[in-house]
Image 1 (cartoon, helix red, strand yellow):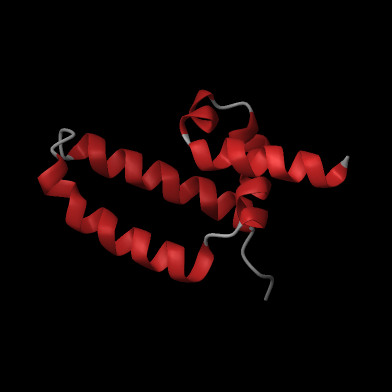
Image 2 (tube, rainbow, N blue to C red; image 1 turned 30 degrees about the horizontal axis):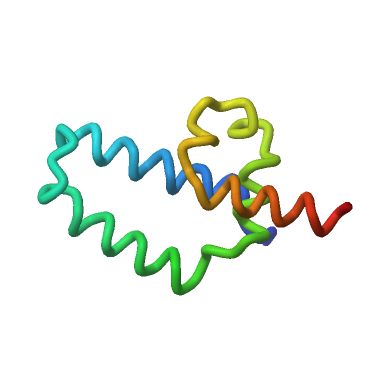
Amino acid sequence: MDAPAMGFLYGVINEAKEKITKNLDSNKPSYKGIWDIVDAKWERQLHRDLHATAYYLHPRFRWSPNVSKHPEINYTKDDATYMVE
């Protein structure tokens, strides 16, 4: 079985969090507990600069206006660009 495409997973997690927020009418007390669980798992197991770079380069997300909403993507992208140069 192939490993999941981490760039895609990174993007889908962000989309899921945005949908949760929207579905709960942006009421932070309503969605904060859910986000805390997702973020704890994400930070402990999945969040890596390489995955953020893969997300940025993934065609589905690369041209999305939402890609610039995530500051960690911009920092990671800049770090990756520096390493390639």
